[in-house]
Length: 194
Length: 294
Image (cartoon, rainbow over all chains, first blue to last red; front, side):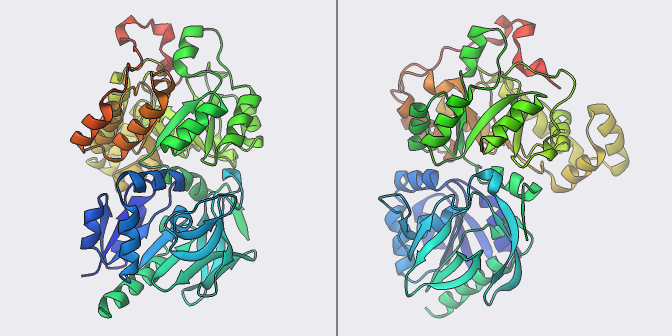
């Protein structure tokens, strides 16, 4: 059975575990880098990106996650996860895991009072996805190899580059599991091709 | 069509804070230390609870200069406290763009009968609770996040433990009840019936519940996680300690890895003196902040 891990350092871990299980895959919490060997795909959940990055460093996850991706195993980042995957962050000198060739802006829609829900069309996945944006980032610039799957008010909010997928919103906070199901399919295909 | 301030957006914000530490700060410098240490949010205050306790008198919403200074200093969310029932303080904080409001018993209540109707606001609220009835009433009023009350500013974990255990135990009791028993239970604990039915179905509260009020060491934070807290608030503990930066980092790591006891032992070494703390029986009844609201 396909097993998907959720990086469980901080953030909305439980919701992702629930959604992955609802899509018929195995879901486990990843707290130690050694556990990456047990999984076929990894989710970087929403939370506070600065906090998660600090804990990634404390527990030596940095290279381990990059290596996981280089092996062709799929990684899906939501909100803070999207920030962690970007090669550049607006108004910051440094970025984090640099998995997707894109520049993101943090808290791009504003502070919490500006957080919102809206229907978003995600190409090939859902025509009307109820997307929950919480102090969300968006993609300011995407590289030539990055596939843009969704925009909201002309801002890029969902991207894919090879085995990497990222959304600015939180697909795990609703009962609409289509986004997670899409990632589960990516993982299954990756497993089948190895 | 987009919607701001929905229940999902407000509760979701708190979900993103899970497994994290929210730290009390009184200026930009402390806020930056907290962010650097890995705090998921900071609480902007004029004084930390132990100083409020020492100062006495009426404690109010912080001077907006301080809140603004903190808002501008960090990129993590900023919370701020309004007095219980003080509709205007809450509206002022909302207008300033604060990310979360704590309707808090740490400040002197403005209304000794009614809490704020939090559903009216775009900004989410966190409130304290000592038991399931209190938790359910706050959720009924629109709180998007809960925390134990504990006894703030004491550095004594015993009340936070009591409140966390109480809520958990009442939820377990509720899940074993038949539907007809729930109505009587709702009456007994003064909780909305429909909400209790929902909690009974899910086996948990519909919002996150953090621990607060008396957390003074990394082990205290880990203990609260062990008891089922979704995360922790640390008030006076950090910036009243000898080495705040080191202390803050240790609390963050102990919260994440709350069952890694060897790690907690390492984290707890050479932290310097923790805040002195107050034994509960030495606090006069009128000085107990947790009893300021129900």
